[in-house]
Length: 279
Image (tube, rainbow, N blue to C red; front, side, top):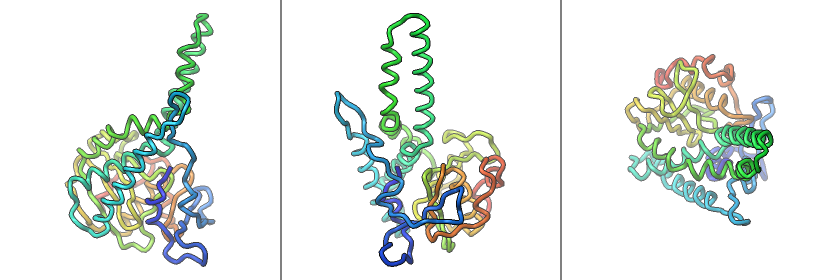
């Protein structure tokens, strides 16, 4: 679900012998026991995006994601060097962010629930009315492909929306840095109960590395490589961790109490105050 190339940025800088390239993975329910894991094997699920096609396997979505990951690597080289971002760089980062929004569990699981409910309702109606099961069978057949279809059908539309938004890249020299996890993207509307990318006050964040945070907004004027202090790093890490389903990645395996405010977004100070208020 989470690309290995992306996770490599969080490789522990001082690993023990035989653990080079590993990352600190922390369970939200057991933050006292971080574990060093290989990004080659972690956050992965075989055939997650494979589609069924005429009795065979359609790898179109996997191929598209591979291309998006390569694009991100090209754009991130400029981010690391703190170079000006070209229009192509912004498009590449937008596609990567869109992919990270769609390929993880949150959105596909919502759509799977909707599709499952529609299947159940269709099957019940067919049984009640004595109809054939063609409609419910068609819905059932789509369930295994829901993740691949979510990415395949939503990638261009979501990336297109992000390209229209204003992109800032914030940086930090904070010792702990930015965390990431099984749901790296966080969508927040400060002070609102519901959050969605089209909201005029939305703040959409995705950590690009322990030192770099991408920040999408409809309102905030783009800022490149503006520094964030520890307080703001702690607040955005609180958002990221709250949005993760079960686990997150900390660059050096460290945690701070400020990262574990109540999970419900509107109950947290960071949800009522714009992220840029305390740079």
